[in-house]
Image (cartoon, rainbow, N blue to C red):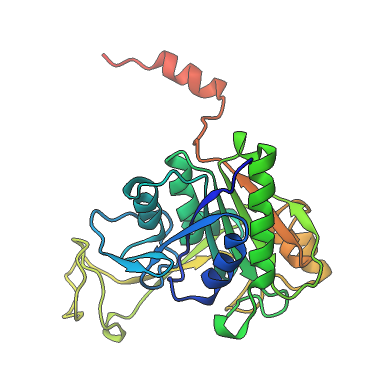
Length: 293
């Protein structure tokens, strides 16, 4: 770009998180940065939107009582600024794998931006040994922030966003010179369902969807179940699911975001939000033969 880009910056960890502070410093050297970020942690909310939000001014821009997608919607349509790009992060933990990407508030902000016609980049940090960057105050987000700024600059200058809506990036905070790999989100997800003891729960959801403040006994047609996401099938607990072992390298194919993380690389996944329809001859035949009489 011939002029400095106008950048809308947000995140899902909250405006007081160290990741967004470090990223703002890097992006300020690149262009004009306005921050619109959540008041509090909004991790895992995906592209959830609210009809109402409270806005307060902040030295960097605005803090908002809503989700990352709310922040982007307000920034792109509520401010008198035409932004060139939306950047979301640095998230204090990775967002890799197709299912995780779909639930991420960090990525959700980028998806909202793309639907509103503005290109975006979501940047998340991981540690190649610790995996989770927690507590975030004990880690340095400088490397992922620098990588994000360089990718934003080059993507805007080279026309990447003519073909791509959103870049989802996972960068290690500990690897000194990590290679940058073009990837795609790995499809790897399972769900585990088990019966729960209602007497052991402080609150459960009733059959009408409303939350019970106490279990108060179940109706004859009710039961309680636990729904456990298995975002890394085959892994138990919260230990690092991406250790650098031959077993894990074989589990995650070359070219996937998860394999890049096994190898302590920077994963760059181009995403589209067009929900493009696959070409299905079988479906075309079904549609042609449906009798609505």
